[in-house]
Length: 204
Ligand code: FES
Image (cartoon, rainbow, N blue to C red; front, side):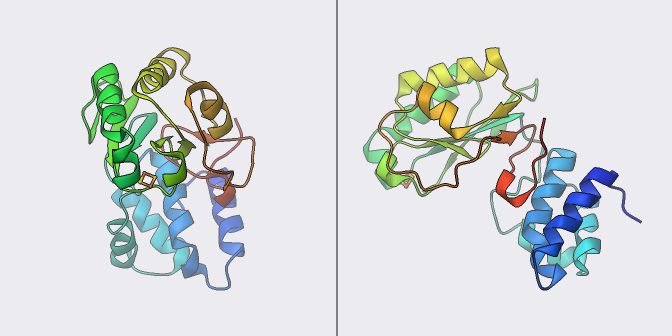
C-alpha cells in the first residue's frame, strides 16, 4: 500500500513502464521520492524499494553514491556552481563567492527560510560555456560574478515557481557552448531538484 498520492503513484507507474525490469527505474523513482518530500527520506527510499521490488538497502546504496540525490533538506532553489578546471580558469570560484556573498549562504548550506541552497560542484558537462551554474539542475553558461549576484537577487525577489534554462540563460548567462539538451518548456519546479524529461516534475 503506497503512501504516495495517486498522482505520484501514476507517475511512478509511467516511469516504470519505460523499463523492461521495474528495478531499472530506481534512479528516476528516487527523483520522484525527492520531489514528493523535498529531499530523500527513509520512508521515501522504502517506498522506492517497494515499487522496484528491491530492498531498502539496495535503494540506499544508489542514493548514497550520487551527490545529486539530496538526503537533507534542500532549499526551493539549489544553486550549484561549477569550480572544476575549465570553470575555475574562467572565474568559477569568483562566481561561487559572489553567490555565497549575495545569498549569505555558504557552500553546502541552506538559508533559514529554506529558499536557497548553495553548493560548489564538479564538472557539470558545460565546460565550453564556462563558468557554468545550475539552478535546480537547469543550466546557465557564461556566468559572471555580477550576473551571479543578479541571479540570486532574482530568485529571492521573483521566486519563480519554475526555473527554465532558456530564460535564465537569457537573463544571466553569457557565451553558450552549444544546445545539448532537449528543448522543453517546463523547467524544474522546487522545492527539490528534478528533471521533467524523466517525468518527475508535474505541470504547475
Ligand atoms: S569544468 Fe565546469 S562545466 Fe566542466
